Length: 267
Image (tube, rainbow, N blue to C red; front, side, top):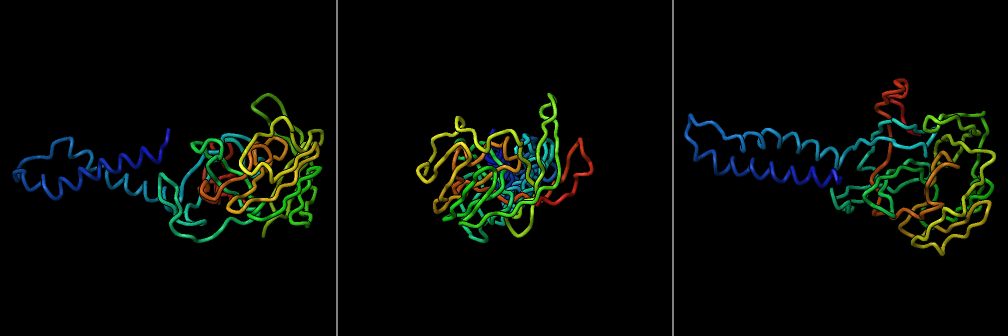
C-alpha cells in the first residue's frame, strides 16, 4: 500500500468537506440544525490528518526495521525516526526535491526508495558519494585510494530468524565523522557473484570473487549494509539515485523486545 498517497487522498477529501462547510454549507443551515454525519466526521478528522501529513512529509517519518541487513547498528524490530528535511525539502507523494539543504555524507544511515522497486523503502549506510572510486576487496574498504580504518573488537553472534546463531567478527569502521559498527562472517565471501543484477551504470563497476571496484556516477550514491555478508545492497542492485532519497535515520524510538534500545541515536 502506498501510505503517503492514501494519506494525501484522505487529506484532500476531508479538506474539501471542511472548506465547503466553512464557506457555504454552514450558512445554509438553521441555527438549531445539527451537522450531518458526512460533514461532522470529515471536519473532525481534517486537522489531525493535516498535522500527521505535514509532519510525516516534511519533518520526521517513522519506519520499522524488518530485516537484519543493518545488524549490529539496527536490529529486527527497531522502530526508527527519519529526518525528512536534512537532505532537502521534497514534495510529498512524488518525492521531488524543491529546496536543497544538505547532501548525504559518508557514514550516514540513509533511507531511500529501492531502485528496482520504488514502492519499497530500504535503509543502508552511505559509503560512496558522487564521483568516488570505491574499492571493496577482502572485506575492506578503500575510497579514492585511501584505506578506510577498521578496528577489530570481538566476536559477535546474533539469532537469525529463530533458526540458529550466526557467528561473526565485530569491527569499528571509521568511515565518516564518527565511527560505526559492522560485522563480517569469516568463512563467507565478500560478494556473491550469482547475486549481482543488471542495473543502471553497471559498466562503472568491476567485480571479482573478492569484491568490487566502482566509480560512483554523478547524482548517485553507493550504499552497504552494516551486516556486510548478509546484506542486499549496492554490490548487487547498484547505485541509489538522488531522487530516491527519503531521509536520514537518526534515532531508535521503540523496540518491543529490547527496551534498552529506546532513545538510542543512530551512528
